[in-house]
Length: 326
Image 1 (cartoon, rainbow, N blue to C red):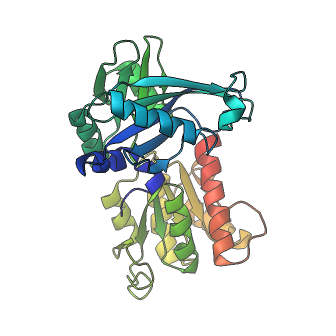
Image 2: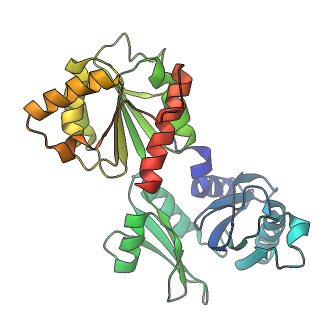
Image 3: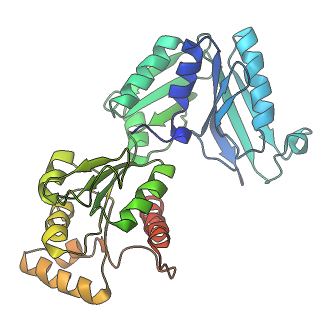
């Protein structure tokens, strides 16, 4: 399936431009204080004023759209500053106490179409790619892993931002992935929540009655045995894995594979007693205490969740915690 809409800003801008509607991209390049969005957050604006994405959670979008439409008229990129110290801050709604700087680039004039096309193509191929913009002379370069040590560090931290040389580096890492082993009721809710958070989802279940297109319309479903399926997916440091079958024959091969992979999260459904038995099996298989400590079990944050949807929320919250605070 495609990226979540909020994570498809370059694609939307390119589509609008190709359709003749015109497009501009606004990007948060710097923040201070209680800014509502982090550097790298983007908003696409069409020539008719349509919007996709956000640079402030709604606080200054109206002012940014006005400037974007002006940029489409004069062909000039510009940097805008909004903060509570400005005379216009409360007029445009930024009353959170922070300050943001926003880069606005008209597509086809400031941001060349061929540059945007290369960015979109790299994103479609799941390549880590960065767009570097020199805010002095407005030159732009597409960069990949290995091209620039400073940019490589940003790929690893997944953080866009200003460099000391005056460039703004917009990082576009491949989407985060969630691999779910077990196409059960919780999985139906979990893929919905995960996709809204920007994850690409894959379901693994060799039981065709569970992993059917009718139960998971539009989702990627793999019917191979879990460890074989994971080997073909090659999970990396931007991958989370959740096992939900509650069946050791299916969960254990997936867990064993995941513990040998660089995934940032591994969560397993089951009670405390179930997990204790799982630990015994993993120890017998040669896994160390440090290996086993990587498992989040029982899966999900302890919020008293009861229904499949509530459990899905608790799992996604724990995944987010591992990603952002791990």
